[in-house]
Amino acid sequence: MSKKKKIVICIISFILVVLIGGLGFVGNYFFEYALLRQEGIVTAANVDPNAPQSIETMAEVANKEKAREEVDKWLEDVKTEETTIESEDGLKLWGKMYFQEEQTDKWVIIAHGYTSSHEDIQPIALNFYNQGYNVLTPDMRAHGNSEGKYIGMGWLDRKDILKWIDYVLSIDADSQIVLYGESMGGATVMMTSGEELPSNVKAIVEDCGYTSVKEMFEAQLYERFNLPSFPIINVANIVTEIRAGYDFEEASALEQIKKSKTPMLFTHGGEDTYVPTEMIYRLYDAATCEKDMLVIEGAGHGSAPDVDPETYYEKVFSFLSKYVK
Image (cartoon, rainbow, N blue to C red; front, side, top):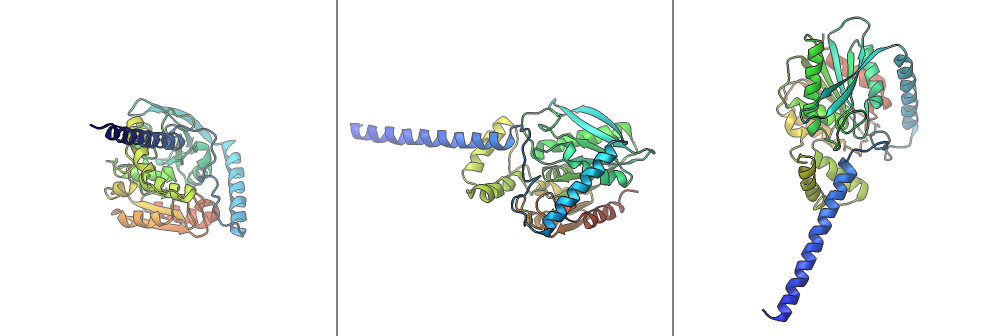
């Protein structure tokens, strides 16, 4: 081999090593940015910077403040209990229960969103409590008081919800259980729906959940950074499989709901740019179970219950009344 050819091969090899190393760095950076346990982060689950700045937004803020005041008053008197379970992979998962004064078999398990905690969905918990439900609000793995290093994006969490269902059954064998989830929690309960569920699980309500982890991250890359999904998502997926044990494409609510027989209500904000509103229509069309849908116009991500609480909760509890007695 000539000296010139050796130099060319060395240069090409060096470029390939740099490219592969660079891709590996980008994939690992994305993984750690998105999926490592995070504390005290404000995300679009709490604030949607793309929400229209109008009188509706002012009304939304007022509704949130009112809901928080009602929650604070409720927490002064409601009977609560903290509990823990062990996940399939050995993590200690924490949850808080809110009990009715009178015995009831009506239960709801509420799954919160990405980098959130049980506290953020207390206004939803109160609305269910006011309808006569005992409420269980787990902190999802890698969130709040629960153990875990890696965020499961709903896919790992679906197995955790199965464990929480078993826990409720262990204290109330006759329970009628509703699963409710917001954002990542919405994806979680949809992913759970495709598993084998006990007959005690009567219905599911998902709010602003995504079709799949892959599509969710693709949408975020484009919306927030104006970047294409290839090759970032592909490399990040490899890192995630190695470090967290799941695959972005396999982690699909869209595929799971095709297997579900549990009645499901799909809800979403009409102005959601974080989890694009178009996803609810594909999810609804894919579901073969008994189903209904509600889109609140003018609402951003996770804000449908705040923009129009009257319409939202009337729809939720009207739907559930057909399955929970």
